[in-house]
Image 1 (cartoon, rainbow, N blue to C red):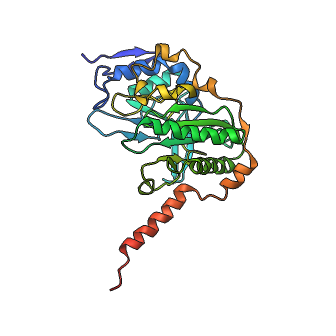
Image 2: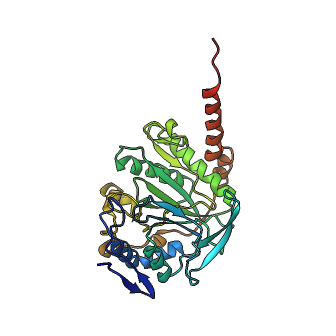
Length: 319
């Protein structure tokens, strides 16, 4: 039995196939989940150039940015220049149920929109901190590091930050801000540095993995045209967890595995959504921005350091 069906004019095929190894879910479960949360996830995707992670039967997951040639004409799109590949990329704009269902039928499991919208490309939108705990650690260290970040934000007047599970093993902290992309990126670096100083035994800003030790990585690189897994997006992880908003007071009572395509519907959606949790955008504090502009961009610094270490390894020794 193929389990084919149709919704909103979209033909859905092979619904009874397993989604991926370890998913504990079928393609039907993915479609049903995304349809159930469409009123929550679509506001996070609308007018934001979208990258998705698809997983086809018998293949490894892959990220798709450029829409394939067979994409229906009714899928809205935005062409942007990609500096990395030096070409125009036609990104999807997932603005409606029909497009979301089409992506689900394409076995698009993960949804990674840009932080900026096509209508306001010069606005940074959010200051985002991605908290990545070390392998083998408990979720508690991610929670503790999120509270460090929140303390820094509160101290500088950026109150009302919202937090969600990443859908993997960490957390995402968001706070809406006003300003330029450059200043927002600088402020994010400064927040990470200040949080690290509050508890250097717990958190680190070291971009190179081997330099982190057994600490939570405070990833300050999510800015500008960067993407972040959307709230309510499933992830390609065992059990198919989803990125889900959590109240700060509830962080000690939950784990990322609590929210899956099977459980993150119905009663779980009775609380206010991710969009409703966001405060009004705040202006970036000048002292935070000034400090951030003195901190090197993590990816660039790591690239130069990696090259330096590679040269050191290949340099002949004396003797």
